[in-house]
Image (cartoon, rainbow, N blue to C red; front, side, top):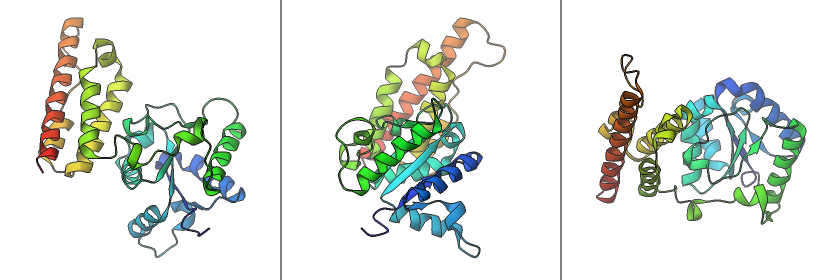
Length: 248
C-alpha cells in the first residue's frame, strides 16, 4: 500500500495537545502512519500549506473531540473538509462535550470512560481493518465507513435541511439545555461559513441570535419567550440559506 493511502491525519485543538501527541506516538508504535503537525511540520515549513497538503493526502482523519475542539473553527473546518471529500472520519472523545451535528451519525471511541488501553486497542483494531481493506460490518468500524455518498450532511442544502428539522423539533426542555443549543448554534455557524464564507450576511445574522434572556428578564415566561425568539430566528435564517443554495 502507498504511504498516502494509509495516512491518518490527526485534527485536534491546541488545548488537547498532550492527549493528541500521546495518541500519535502510540499509534506510530502500533505501525499506523500518523500525521500530526507537532511531529511532521519542521522549522522553515509554511505551516498552513503543509497542513493543507497533509489533510488532502490523508484518507482518514482522526478528530480528537473536546469542548475546545467543538469550539475551534479550525478543527471543525478540517472535519468538514474531510466529510465533503469522502474521507473516513474517526471521532475520538478525550473529554465530555456536545457532538457536532456532522459527526453524530459516526460512532466515536470514548477515552473518557473506562481504561485508556481498552479504548486505544479498539481504535487500533478499527484502523487496521481499514488498512487491510476489510472493514467490519458491525459496531464501531462500520460507523467509520460513512462517506459523502451515504452522509446526508455532505452537501450544503442537506446540512441546512437537517439543521432546520432539528430547530423545528426543539421544545422548551431542549431549548433550556445550554449544551445542546450551544452545539446547535455551532453546527449552524460551521454550515453557513462553509457554504457562503465568513463574511456572508446570513452568517453574521446567525452569530447575533440570542438564546438567553437579558439580565432583567428572570421569569420563566420571559426566558421561554427569549428562547422561542432565538429558535424562530434560527429557522428563518436556515430557510433563507436553503433558498440561497437552491437558487445558486
